[in-house]
Image 1 (tube, rainbow, N blue to C red):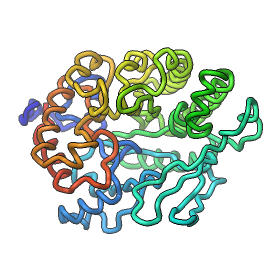
Image 2 (image 1 turned 90 degrees about the horizontal axis):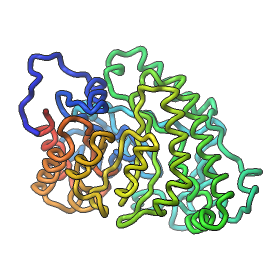
Image 3 (image 1 turned 180 degrees about the vertical axis):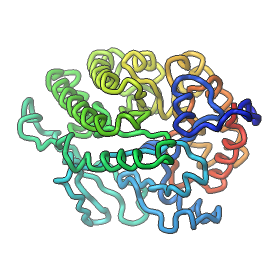
Image 4 (image 1 turned 135 degrees about the horizontal axis):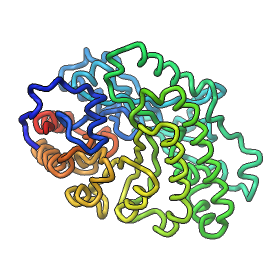
Length: 401
């Protein structure tokens, strides 16, 4: 990457055009930039507030608000996004109209139960995010999982109201039409949701010992996802470039399940959801967030129909060499993330280390297009504002083709 542009005489790209070029594995004027368009490319409300004060920018967001309660991510203001020249804008559908969030104080924790019946809790004093605190289907057996559980309606009118209003706002605004729009699906991934509902130990036992039960749950979740996408894409599809899905498949050093088990139980269902989205909206590219050491599964993810890989966790086993990832998979996958390591470098490194990391990842991942810059997962609460400034300034300096 270099700091000069080969496009001085060309008309400037809009953000939508810039991202579309990158998704087509072509080089636009510069690397597209994402911050806060998804639940996995955001910034902690604590880090956001601290940076606004440090940079003398509180006027860009005088009263910062939480946008995602579970992860305590900031609802980053439009003025701040424009200040950083962020290309992406994200739509995250809300819950159904029949569910209301109720917080309660229980001992040292604040708790709530979401519309899936999943309980969450966060320390009341200086908590950083809500953690899952139970598994409502852990004790169910066989068809009990499906028969009586109060499953959310994926096409609930309340859930789709935000999709409708966003689509109307885009249609009425040339500025919004020029932005690069993404949209989340109904929920976390089919494996993640099965693990949350059943419990990790129990669902892994189901896969090994009761595959009919496991497959029934995975099928139910896949069907619900497709029902949501059917309704949401009818409303938002023409404005959308990216459909956001997620399914964490790795730990820091290994896969959560074996490649054979992935291919037997998850890959067919991932493929079914991806195929449905692409039949519905052929121009939309499908984003998969999958943390951890997932290198052995990348060819399978491509075959399943995913076009975009996030977060490119460069600290995980097999994921460190981004030049190799680009060489091996860059013709088929767009890398969205990997811009800087968020486990060590961004929170604990020096600004100089942050700058070096950003330049290295741009050099590895940007050539030829097929790269969207964002951090490896969300920016956490302990990241110093000096390091955020070093990251964003370095990206702005070296992001041009």
